[in-house]
Length: 90
Image 1 (cartoon, helix red, strand yellow):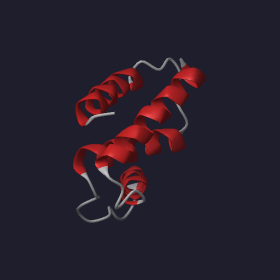
Image 2 (cartoon, helix red, strand yellow):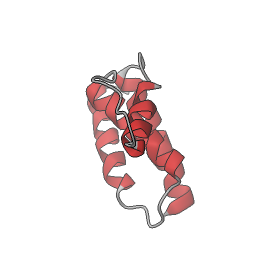
Image 3 (cartoon, one colour):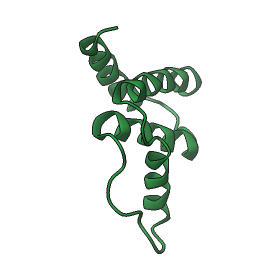
């Protein structure tokens, strides 16, 4: 698969992720978030949120777990996860 095809597939998966009829679990949502951020921005940047920002901390940690993963690999995993969620929640 060339980079153009992968980007198109990724863009379609992003659109499909917004069409789910049921809400995935928080863990699945965090996986989607982390893979999306890794695919589009690379390794996590900035300080880990502190205090009582539990949602911010969870999102930061989900992204930080993917440190070092290539953008293309993150896109492939995102695409696969959206396909799996569509089978479960569409």
